[in-house]
Length: 114
Image 1 (cartoon, helix red, strand yellow):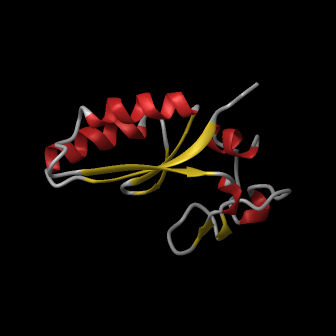
Image 2 (cartoon, rainbow, N blue to C red):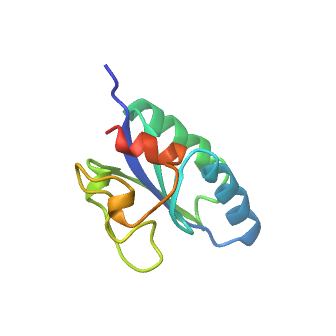
């Protein structure tokens, strides 16, 4: 049984050096939604361990780091410079129907498999 779920990991870092370090770290394992907003896929125990790992990169009294569970990433609505128009991906739709053309990237495959 796969107990992994999607989490929205967001941060607000006051120091530019810590900001770059945290951003590089999260970028390796998450789907960038905005500059400081990422979707990551983890088990409940995995997200706790991941957040502890990220917490080692921040200053706890100056910075903010949060993770919110996302039960259905296909229901996330985007406008403007987002990945696609409308919602992130409505059930039953493909990337080309959502306004994106070309090959499906790795993180999209993970998202579509949900």
